[in-house]
Length: 440
Image (cartoon, rainbow, N blue to C red; front, side, top):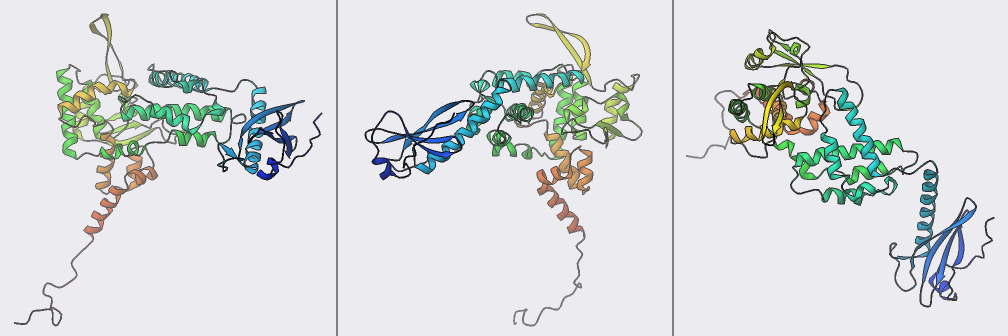
């Protein structure tokens, strides 16, 4: 049974001042079975809320009343502010109780664990046994206090503080991959438990893990002139010979530069995807995005130099074999590794150390990233006046993304085309306007 409440005048400071101090609150109804309470002390008072839930009353403290100081909505609350806070608290507590009745509410740790399990299963099906996402999330999320945070209580500041506390030595690319993995894990759990978690949680995740301004501009600075691309390709062959890669590194590096494709696309190519007569490569579409893509491959024209470089690894091999492979090594002692067998490239992280050697050999800045090949290829195509839709198709992306990230280069290309259409219209000898010539 709910209680019969003796209504007290609590709305103004002067009304509350007339009340006698006592240990239990004065109550006033502010909603269905929800009461706002005021516990009067000698000089001031505090606000409380109580509500009826499943056969009994629950009670919480809200904060100090604005008896001595002006209301600020945080530390000191007016009657109106206390009423609003009380109703919001009751709604949140009731929703939490309903959610808990269906089982324990998920924590961040559980969200990450489910994401890692799903991702590992997908990568196993693709033949990739590398556990990069699991390693990143285990080290930087599960080892952080945020892992024990209830998903319902996760706030934008929690996520921002986690991101700000990441080790200073992490590269921007590593941070981007880590944040994207973490965001995917949280969004997956938010969708899975959408009936039990706050509807504002996806917006909280987006705001708390938003990209920094610097993070969004790094890749756009990696557009290199063709001369620098050639230096990097030549350096790839130099490192290949020096470190005895037997062409595995040089060919992959050259093909990345020639196609502008992602590492994960090239490493899924098969021998049959090299069309020698047409100087064409059939590049698998990426696994980025949602849903099934309409086409499985993109035809990309390349130079004869690329075809000549690939001929040794397609001769006498089955068309179904993976095109790019490398030597795998086993450790025979604490300091000795020996070649064991050839196998496919697995993840882009395997290219990290060779790439450092390539940029050093090419005397390029240390922060040059492999993605410079892709950005440079896109800009090269735009400057050649290829239609934006065709450029997007060749690079397995959308015209919207091309326009968003390479808009300045599109303007330059269109300006060059417009300049070609300009022709002189004035006759060779033009009579000056009267008075334009100086008097002799």
